[in-house]
Image 1 (tube, rainbow, N blue to C red):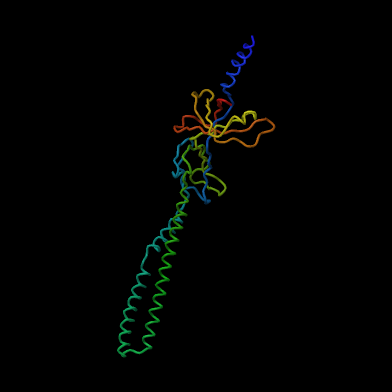
Image 2: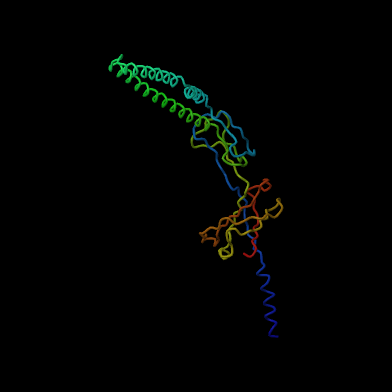
Length: 266
């Protein structure tokens, strides 16, 4: 009879160790980006619609930029022009030839020192002018590159791969500096948000796997991994937050759905 209580105790303890805890959770998008523009202006085109999938870098809207494009074309002509540099090089080379000839005449005592000084001064001046026009060409190239970037920034691209959640403006509307064109969400991965009672805090850790079961009408069980454990408890509810990352490469699961989170050993 002394062994009976021990046997009963072992049978009772085993299910507790293998128990799985189930918690309520919700599926959230991993990113929500409200795509704006670095400039205010009139929208020339909006190339996306609600529900459309977009890729990172894909152009979703364009601001009117006729004036900027014309300015860019003028700056491109200046940047590509070599006329001033070529003319100054030709003048320098001519003066260099005259200087060498004058130097020969001076050695033969045919030319005077004054004429030599004069041609030397002209040669030094031409070298200085050549450096100046070369610098002006470099500045023109930099101005063109800067204007090119400004024009490119008026073509607004998506910063992420995702789904257009909403479109706020259309072509022809004025886009203010504090407004956005469209909201884009990333559904791969999904974030699973849950709140656990604080007594389970010692039993969970980052990297731990869990099973996510979406509520009806969705079906299936999906494996997720804990990526965030809040370090601050909610004293009012006696809970702490956890976030899990759920791969969703094909976009099978929508965001915004409630779910159940099963953690083994919690």
